[in-house]
Length: 628
Image (cartoon, rainbow, N blue to C red; front, side):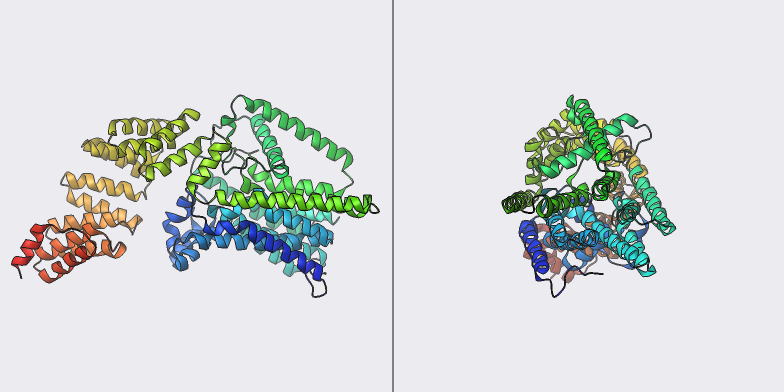
């Protein structure tokens, strides 16, 4: 078996180094990118599950869904980064880039094993490395799942090829099987691998054997797990509004959409219009896509049935992208750049073989044609690298990202909604409300936009308008726990405690581990004088969020009012340990120490507050002065 790189093959080593250097340059801007509010908040920055590397937590990663996803190896990788580097975005981006570099080398290796041609390996791997469609999975932290599953996927394919080429030695087989398991533990999209392995058997003209069955059983198991996860967030609906024909049209459109973006990578976006957002053009676009696909398929089977390379490349693309073209309606039928990360390898392979054929055979004696081919190839690589380099900068922060989407596709509702979230967080509530209104105009059945607009109304004191929006969100999705909780807060601010309590109860019923809802219900019980119930709710909030400083502080207040000073001081201390700049907890602890006659400790907290630049209540200082 030949090796990819050997000491006697300097041109090959040089080509690999060239690919890696170009790739590093293209993705270098990503190192300075921040997290974005497109899932990075849910999966990383606000995800409590990644804050611990304890055995219990690791067990939870592998035995439960996280944000309705089963990607345990991905979350484990986040947890390792968090353990040593906290939430430093540079580390997470560097990890993605390193994985992409490894995948590029694996593509080089895989293609060489297939065709035994270094030049084809070079073409395919450099296209894979710098293509603009591959910016998203590398530059977006939340797309770790794509670069990680791809790494194990490619290694499994390589191991299987060694298995088939080495008289089916069992060690290569079991290694391939193990790597496949690691791949599906990173992302269920890897379930296509068993069919890809059959495709390798077809390519090598080898008879497939029964040993492939365990791969299919694993694929079926993880398909079921993925479906259960999606059902938990209603991404698969029993009463789906799309018919079978609609799903076929969606799939046809997606298949050709990616090919078009591969050839002409312009107007790329982290979010493309959904089928409903295409408007009146939807039917025409989908029908044309179906017709073109049928035409291309007919040409292939008429003229390519004896060409294994052609069939292999096209089927590799179709098979690996099949889980995400929405032939079976899982999630929203929206194309995404990251879905092409592995599938485009099939089309890149065809491109490499085609260029090789033109260069070495058809025009062998016409050197000017060969130089022209080289010029075209270098031009394409240069253009793609330039586009990717600039595309990487689009992921610099959330605002740049969503502005780019809106500029390219003005009718994408989620772009306005998520930009509105940014405005709301920065205190620009009027622009936030305007963006939410635009999202609702595009999609009147968008519960998140109503809920978020309600938050902005609440921030400017328009609680009645906020309640109206929360109610609309609940009417659209009656299992929207966050909308119930937020409406409960609005009722609370209007001092309508009974309705607030009803909404908090409903939020907890829908989401039993909803720490914020327990805390808010505890506030209602606290105001109503039902202190035991309040303590139970604050304690439950702490159980589900051990870093909930306000819950510790409020529970401490109740304990002190009940003259259980030690318990109160313990809670204030917990809050301070979590947030050493929590002025309210210092003040409350100082008062508790005073009431407990521990004046020196009370003075210590007063001095800490003064060091923090916090003005201390003069009355407390006067009382402490008297005790000197």
